[in-house]
Amino acid sequence: MTSPRRIAYQGEPGANSHQVSRQHYPDWDTLPCASFEDVFAAVEAREADLAMIPIDNSIAGRVADIHHFLPGSGLHIVAEHFLRIRFHLMGVPGATLDQVRTVHSHVHALGQCRKIIREHGLVPLISGDTAGAAREVAEAADPTQAAISPPLAAEIYGLEILAEDVEDEDHNTTRFVVLSRDLVQAPAGDGPVVTSFIFNVRNLPAALYKALGGFATNGVNMTKLESYMVGGHFSATQFLAEVDGHPDDPGLARALEELAFFTTEVKVLGVYPADPFRS
Image (cartoon, rainbow, N blue to C red; front, side):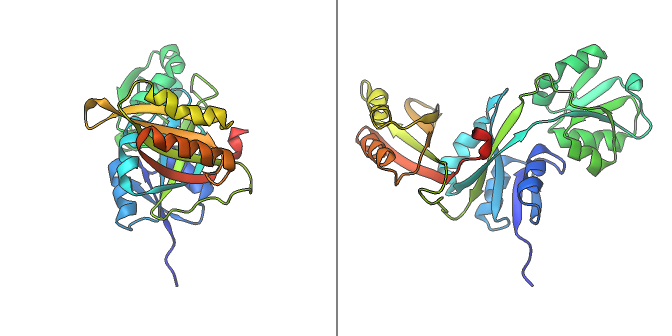
């Protein structure tokens, strides 16, 4: 009998990464990890087959650490998934909203749920992550403490929902990418595809402008372009880019060929099906 496949994520059981892993890989075992570095290490060491990693949020922007781990990890993006982020206010069984005085959650979640915190005069307390906040409240067994956490956390830690969907914005969505040790590219000509890659431009005047010109002239839609420093050097900038299309498509093939003339390195991180959420 073969053992179930395993997918790793950062956070405690009940976190959004756990939720999206269960949603798209329901028959897989999940492996919670304390840090993103631990998630990458788990896949590299074959303790897990895949990793579920948040990369962008519609409110908070990019998840910064990921851009530094991805290039040197040796892992490949094989899929993407979008999750509408829902936060509930939850407390111990029998607690009421009027009793609550403090609310625990990750700093970003607290910042995304300011209205209910202000409305009820709650004192926000920062936890390591949203699911960990629910665990802390369950362990404290204090009706004056509540957590702002994903709905799954209430189920796991035996908490009662005191208020549903307490996030300030209803468009709060996180994009996750799935990472694998193996490079598995989506086939060309079988539906919309995303290609993710990194590149370093040569230290020349207008090098970035020239590097990107091939995408414009070949009609390639670039959906992401983000820069970050490498090794603390202000002159060495690495870019993470994403485009619609497959490297075998004539237009993208020509654009990548032109890109090579003005860069010191181009590395494709993944070629994978576009999530239907994009359309």
